[in-house]
Image (cartoon, rainbow, N blue to C red):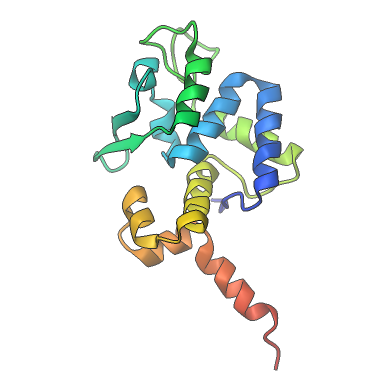
Length: 181
């Protein structure tokens, strides 16, 4: 299993957005919604238009934990969603596959899309889980509240959260950078 990382460079996030928009609006929206909500890819792929249309808060049952999760969509995200779902029916999946009638793309296809864009912009160690990790990384950088982030990500401990978003490794690397005996 390959270990994936958060995207730690905001300019690379913008490059990813452009690369994904070039491949299609669906792919761009998958990325944007993922990095702004912290949802697991399996939960993102199950979203339907009716789940997000005109809503400030979205409530889902997480596939992995089977817990109910309610999350806020800020005004910018609501605006992006409104543009994206124009002309879509309420019962349609947000991230539809071209195979079959109203079926979501697979996790494998989501990985291919994200990984292709990552390679185009010079990133490695990027996969579907990078969306959630990127959300966590930047949320932590913005607010510095690991306890709150732990709750958002449904982690068992703060140390798990810091390791998950790559902060533990980043701090370890920083401490070792100038350490030489």
